[in-house]
Length: 417
Image (cartoon, rainbow, N blue to C red; front, side, top):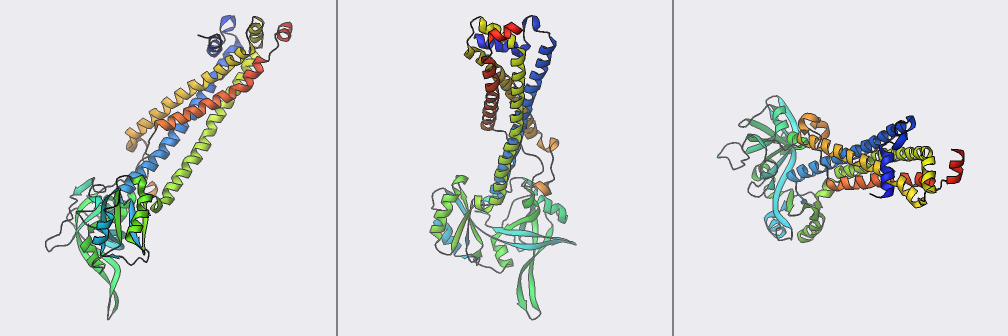
């Protein structure tokens, strides 16, 4: 054990020696505990804030990408894509593309008895659409089976929230009305068709569970009178973060008149808001750690004033100014390290509890937040960055008091004290 650390530890424990139980030392011990608690509180708050932000970002990303494509290829004139089979075959040859599925969707009115609401009806190819694996993995009832019905109504998959609002179950028949009507002697007559609910899915993302329904592609083409046409070709990628590069290659492959949109662009407002929220949260809650550093600064200034006589004795016995400076630096860094360790343990502990018992401890209104609970995703790299920032602030807070202690003149202090 070095001389500097030996003295710093004695000060950290309350002074040591005959003065251990002096009132001033007890007061400094209380201030030390408060400084450690302040650092711990700041670190805990920052860990939890970043864990919640990462939880929302990653949960939204997982569920959005589980229900939507990584790259959407559409026509610029919104006229729909014809001869889509040949184009899809060319797109499947692009590097990184794992699947290409055609889809057709429009806003429609779904009704059951006296209940009705507007939704998005999406027609997919059951053998090709990745929604079969991603969005429909959690079925509340029925089956994710969109095979052609023998003469009956086409099959329909609806979200759990939508099924509750309409009061329908697997096996019930609903009516879907399209605004894409047909002209008649009496004017524009809306198109409508009956569908049979074959399954109720729960994606965990409220917007999809309450506002989307899925059926066969040919059924939507017939309902919208768009035979041989789709509105989008949806590309799935092996690496979702290569979407921007693949979208450029897809647009070039498709030729003029087409535009390819990566998922980052489709949902840019959401993820941009989450990134901004993370930055603002880190800045404002980081001020708590900064205030904790000021507590360390004040504590060390008081400690230097209280220990001036002891510092003068050490200097008169041969201690160097650099050693005195390191004593107070180690003292302040030790306070910061103790607070940081306690804050990391508490923050990651609460984040683990939140992630394990999320639906019981931290419920949310899914209609407002999109999901039914507060998601926690604490990352080790965030913890390391927080620890480094807290220790740097603690070290910076020690520099002035340590420099002040190293400049004590033993003759002046011992003459009058």
